[in-house]
Structures are given as C-alpha cells and as structure tokens.
Image (tube, rainbow, N blue to C red):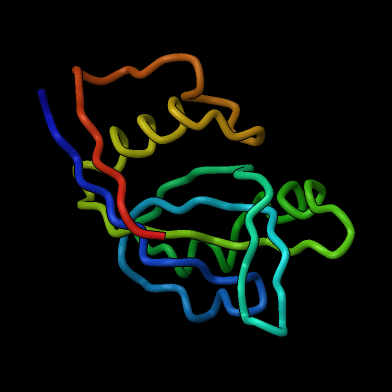
Length: 125
C-alpha cells in the first residue's frame, strides 16, 4: 500500500492570493469569513479541490473563479489552503482528497478512487 503525507501550509485569503507559492501541489478552496479584530479565519465550507504544477499561477488565473464566488454568502470571501506534492503524486493525492471530502464544485473524482490502495496522512492548517 502506498502512503502519502500531505502537509497543508495554512490559508491565503482571496485578497492575499498573490502570496501563494509557485511550487506544485494540491489546493483547497473554501468559503470563509475573516475577523479583523483578532486576525482569524473561520472556514464554512470546502467547495473545491484541485492540483497544479504552479499553485500561484493556477489560483491567480483560475478558470472557475466565478463559480467559486457564486458559493459565497454575504460577508464571506474565498480562502485557499495549499500543500506541496511531488508531480508524480498529484493525481492520486487529488483523487484521494476529492473522494474523501466530496466538495460541491468537483464534478469528477468524487465517486471512485481510481488508484491502488493508498494511505493518507494529512497535517497542517
């Protein structure tokens, strides 16, 4: 059984997405609220999971940004979580995360895990 260790490095709000890394990996898109008084983010819903060779470029130029924004409620904004993943592991990690989480905007990969038996360890924020 293959084992995958995924460490998420935190969140970037939509207004700070230019600070996203340029390495390859997986990313998660959330609807969230930001509390300015204590500088905290509260996540409401995971809406999409994707993969990219360059996380920064993919999110900053995402073709589904309008779809993401349609999921927001008043006072919410988009937040992005990201983790570095080796290029040869992107498909299996993305498929595993989508299969486990079933985000509303992922059309594929929710119903079947189409890779050999695997184990996932997910850490971070």
